[in-house]
Length: 148
Image 1 (cartoon, rainbow, N blue to C red):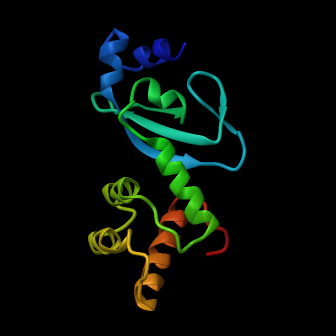
Image 2: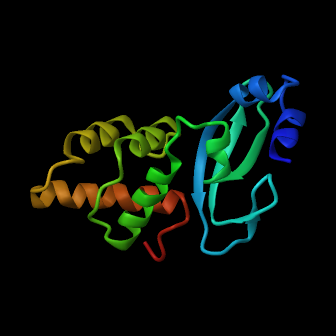
């Protein structure tokens, strides 16, 4: 079912070619299963894919995305979001920060700052404050931060 639906939304007419047209455009995490994957399953971890030739977008789950974008480690993104939601002083991973920069959620200075400190254990109070500010900005952009 998923391959047929992807092919219908693609320029190519075979699964092997059609799946190469799609790239991860964004990820969204929801609290309940109000969305459905293109395959029909209810999902909380949404991978929004965009066709690079026709601009169409589809929503697939974190499991189905691996059927044709196996180089994307979306589960790492979702784990990082969960970590930071649980403790705002935790770090997102480098790939996720790159995506946030590519989507203009964070600016170049914030991106460079985060990449310089994201693996450090002992931050200054100022660095930690700035990191938390960036984390909140990212979570807010994803509607995952209550009252901040």
